Length: 487
Image (cartoon, rainbow, N blue to C red; front, side):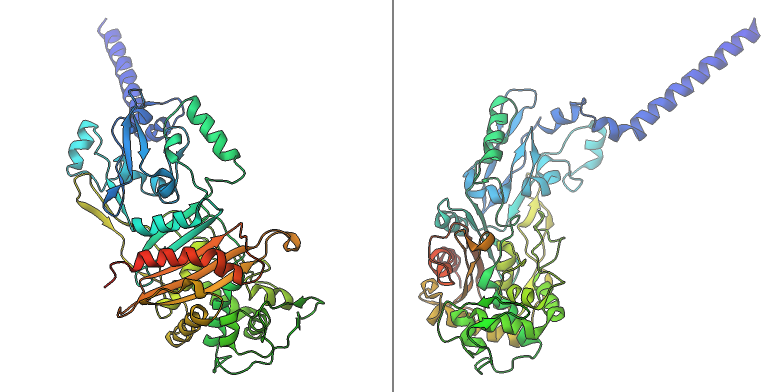
């Protein structure tokens, strides 16, 4: 009898060990898979059981939370939703998160290990730390100036503080209210269908996720490449560029909008925007040196984050001579985000040193204790300081006497460059109007802001002047807002 009892006890012990091993397997090795299983709602319920942390602009929370009384209790709310949608993104119980809502989700949702004051206590109790706050670099007055300036037209604005890389304004138009996507149910699904099927694409972040041919605004990069390479030592010296100019290995004649471009100097070509001179300059620089130059400005970088992903701006690394000529004036396959072109202007304004752009200044706990801070850092030395100084003067001349006079601001030095890029096969569509610029208050020791504006449905005539007519007034309004209170 004792023998059978021992056998039964041993068998029970084996079963108990197997049960413990299986429990350990499930709880330790299978926990992640179970947590992420679509049928497991516990994680979702816990995620929305408390209010989400705030995204802050100029000391004001532009997001909040609403108690829905449902199982997924708290829904995201947005103050001035369309104004800041290109900054915040959305946090939806149905469709997930985007932009800052996504990049800073661990802090905002309270899951970041940086947040708990007593991490061991939360680990033992299974509780969740209150959501933290993401404090942005955006200045409300500049954001409003950019948003109102676009006035619902398709386009975007990006503004950067050249000396630090802080993004001061980031607007995409037309916009949308991210709050309509916050919850669940039929109304949210209907809003999603309406927004995603809208031909104007209000959910597309044109400031960082859409690339455009930069047109003549790109001539600043080509001029920088030529000066850095020592190809041009006197910016006032005439060039040997004919007008009209037939592209190499082709029968295509490159036109000029302004007069006087035949044999014009580099300075004159930038000021009035001569296509022929700048295309010829790009050819003389050569493909290898042009590629090297554009990459120092950020082109061809697929890893740029602000902290959200930024679409790669493109400059082809393999081209025929006629294609290189067109690329050197911002056409052919050359494309750029508005943020990228703001980086070009910022590099010129900052003496050639390009700072890495960033949108989140710091994050804090719900009580305001800082848990992480973004420090300014150099992205690239985009050009020599002497080159930047020469380009600054050329951009100043554009505003004083060239195609960008509408951007002038009393009491400040303003540099700019207009641009109009072809749209559609055969350039049959309305051109894209560009204006890139920077502004420095009189008496200040450094520029306050660098701006890039693109307007897709430009109404002005073709040619570089449309950038001055459509985009430059928006840039001026943003720069004026940046200069208010500048020491």
